[in-house]
Amino acid sequence: MVRAGDVICNRYLLREQLGGGGMGIVYLADEPALARTVALKILQPRYLHNPSVVAAFREEAVAASRVRHPCCVTIIAHDRLGDGTPVIVMEHIPGRPLGRVIADEPIPLARAVEIMVQILSALDAAHSTGVVHADIKSDNFLVEALDGGDHVTLIDFGLARMDGSTPIAGMVSGTPEYMAPEVIRGSAPTPASDLYSAGIVLYEILTGTTPFAGGKTADVLARQLQDVVVPPSMRAPERGLPRSVDEVVQRALAKEPADRFATAAEMARALRAVLRGYGHRDVRDVHWDRIAAPDSITNVCTPPPERLARGSEARVAALAGIRHSLGTAIVRGDISDIEDGYAALANALVREGSFADAARELEEGIALLGAHVPSERLTAELEALYSDAAQRRTWRLPTKPSP
Image 1: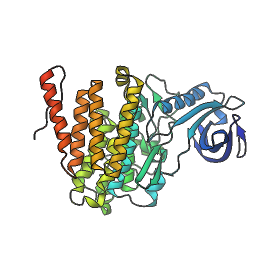
Image 2: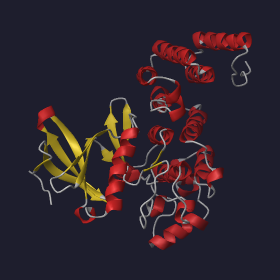
Image 3: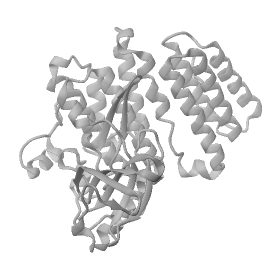
Image 4: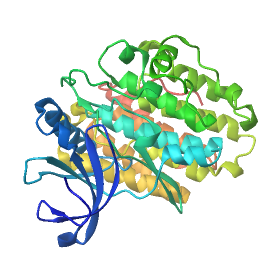
């Protein structure tokens, strides 16, 4: 058994235990050779001789390393102790568990949306790379308070599954208060079940509690299967939540997967629309320049496999770089740089052959800046794109929006 002060893998000095549960125990450690602090997740000793759990622990490392995104923890290495116990080496993320943030004080709608869109952007990145998280809950996210607002990081992929992988026999995929009905019935976790769990987290952020909390585990699971969710505006009437956010929650928590949002990105768009509608009455107080920032974060992720297949990794990295710069510009509220970013992103997508994606980015930029000042530049670029489409007749765009 390792303890504080031990040097493991010939390079990591253990400082303290940060937490534990499930398959592993997490420690804070120093890596003197690189003058940095890391987090180590070490397999629980009782599982060392269980091949299925050892394989699942490794799959966690592989799955998490596939998801490269600002709102997901970075996996640095996969190592082993002298007795063969596997170790996952991760970046150390400062901050407080989201569950603790929720418990400390009510979270206003604007901040709730800002936090939730980052959570959904992390999920969108995971799903785009074929990873199903299978254990989304508030305590698996850390919230770091920065000058520009909260930064949220998904820190635990303990039950994550990749496409085609086989779950461990007897291991429940999720936490009862956050489990989707179909998973409770025995189906394998899917992106749709992740979105259900994300809906539970959203409900918790908005009201301070999960919708089916309390009682024995069997009772919680039964309510997940059968009970109608009390709308957040009724559960926490003192918070003055709009009915439009109730609608988002109700769709996310639909009992049937097909009735939920199709993707995490779609759910994020619905939440941003809620805030825009609510914010028209009090725009300045909800800090639109900061709330808009997650729009760009949603896109800073490893593209889907089919997108990777069409272009080189260098091209993918270039797009991610443009989106990162755009996100920075949105956080600063620099309109000129925001226009530059959307224009550069659209041009890069056109060069890649993704004409429809380029049009959507320009439309998003026009809508975003419309809250401040109409963007003649992006409007002209979009008009040129549609004109080019009409002349070429070799590619199709979505229906042109009405003026």
